[in-house]
Length: 287
Image (cartoon, rainbow, N blue to C red; front, top):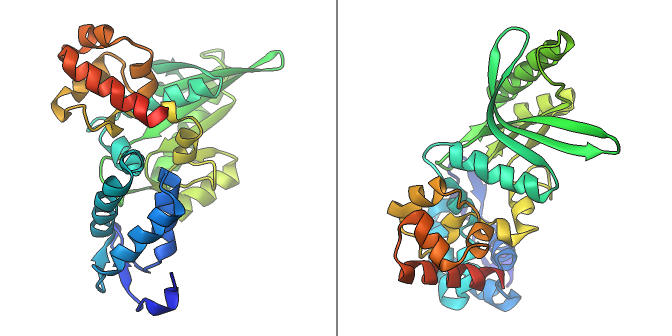
């Protein structure tokens, strides 16, 4: 495709910002989802036909998703990753459980939603992650900020808040009130503001979000092990049943793969036929 033949079109992002349309971004995202280079180029060519100045990213996304499903069904499912994570909500509990499973995959032992006494106040820690490094346990407090709408940034306020809690726990440990925490992490399913990034970098605090850090963001951690795709990426799970799956701790595709259809029925109350379809879809994505 010759980009010179495409008129300058500005796309309206979810945040309201305008950016120049770039067909390469579409091709790259399609290929990342599993489409062939030829399929990706064909989709980008089709998108040219619907472009107009001020078109929204949502309109482009919906059209790409439709075309991708037609050309490559599995790639179409994977393309929905960001949307699927947002569908874990509306509350943030499922996202906390989801990220704890990512940490488990990275070798951490995790505890969810534990109350820990700091020097000044008691804190509910979303995730406590522990991992041996040599003979020492590295203990991390993980704060999760979940958004179920696009275009919302996790900003400086959340970063300051997380670090302040970490400092209170650090002071609490000095006084013998709690265990030692070595690091504070802030994790979100959207993007960080530039101020948040600057502050975290200054304080040596790890933050993980969409496309951040570069090549180590949330989507990369998931793509590195596709069994960590959220179950909301599966089209055969009805929205009305999501709470049943969450209550049964069925959060990622691997949770489906590890269970028999009969066990899924027992834990969620769905029909055996539904469980069979869900399991087949999960296997199709992974294998």
